[in-house]
Length: 319
Image (cartoon, rainbow, N blue to C red; front, side, top):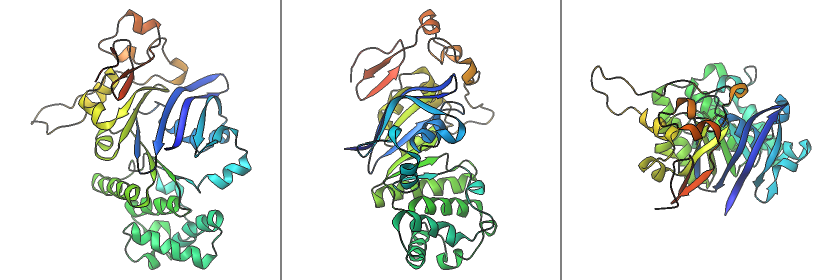
């Protein structure tokens, strides 16, 4: 049974509608990837699930977000404070701005368990040390006495993960968790998240712009473009036979042992800004296969076996 269900989610900032028609579900022990270029609506989807839209002037105008049988769009801010950071944890992309530079590591992680689990400081510290050890942070007791500036970038990100785990969440949202890290550390963090899902039976929503990360880590994927989902389904199915031209282009940009002098593939053009979303299919200005109908009519999702794509030229429900 799915612990998180998003149905036809639409978001507005004043008269601007940067997100619409987004739907997916997530089970415990499962990793769902949300992928797309910057400006596609990935982080906005995460903000909606975390109840953070009002802080930036946004609001949900359509659809529902169901968490363990509860519609999150109906929650009061008081109820959100109990849920956010508790049963739903968030790992942000920049540990430099997630940690208080003036406070030691230990108390920052302790406070989460104190707030959400009602632990004493001593109980919370024991849990902090245990989590830091699980995350393969050396000398966890000593680490608790250090300040963020004394830690490397990769270790800071592990501390942020520890804070997200401290309250024993059911759902973990990781918003570009490896963006600020070098390639070697990125791989370590991705493996770590994968291990956590299996060990703690977490439901992980992984937001990224990197299709190779999706291939390595996720069970399912939602491909987003210009505030809409354009394709979704099991990762193996999507990679074996992508149906939307945007998904095909993203997969085509994954480097595969380039020969000397060979250039990386790229997608011509840029993601449109929310003020300039095109009519019809949002991808048509960059699509090599666009026809007249693509410029005038927005495509609906068409099921193809286990996956589905929003393209006028996807045919039938076949396997």
